[in-house]
Image (cartoon, rainbow, N blue to C red):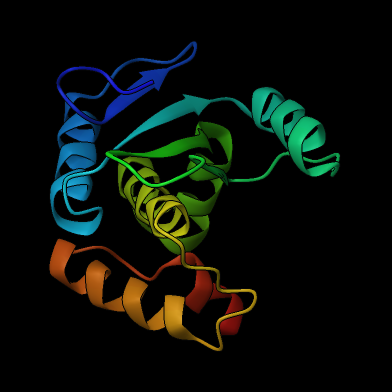
Length: 146
């Protein structure tokens, strides 16, 4: 459920980063056209549990998107693994904070209806444009395609 302030970021057993909350508001305003979302930043164990429960796959993943049913001012929920973000940041040579932002953008694009598994590159193109506008490094789709 969205907060009165708009998009939220919840940190489960990790420290809060006000910059990520601000980035969520930027995504809400610019990418989601004013529609709010909630984002949980948790550990691998929680992402594995969510992945197993909702997707019937038993592994920790970096980001999960749960679109809201129906149209409206709330587009859904994200869950991001800070552990995966930390590892991927090391692998790709940028900060964990940068990786969390990349994952958040990717998840929001899923929440607004993009699906890179079936859209013939449409989400990849949109994500690339948004990453450039937001000053972010290579995204998830480009990494897989490289």
